[in-house]
Length: 99
Image (cartoon, rainbow, N blue to C red; front, side, top):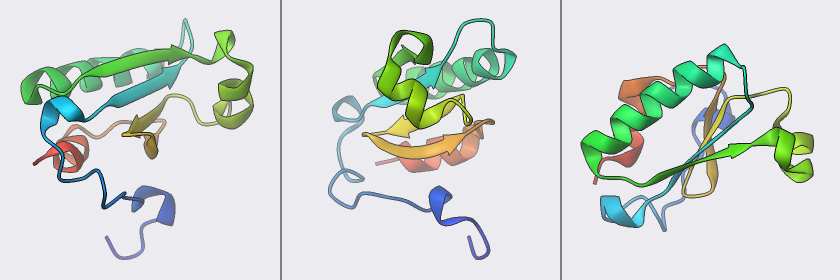
């Protein structure tokens, strides 16, 4: 991961060893966003395969999320910490959620 932006290396050592059902993936996006739709497909697939719960949040319905993420959507959080934005890499998300 050398040379990768620090935003992509953030991990919370307190949560990375949790069982899959104790993890939570949050997809932050908005309606009619093709990148959000693509991200949702990846998140849904990975979470279903691993038994990890996930949720979707709409920045148009939450002013705080809008202020924080409007330039980055879709944004994926893993256990509340930002995992990625714009494009979701399936293998990278799997690694982040692996026990």
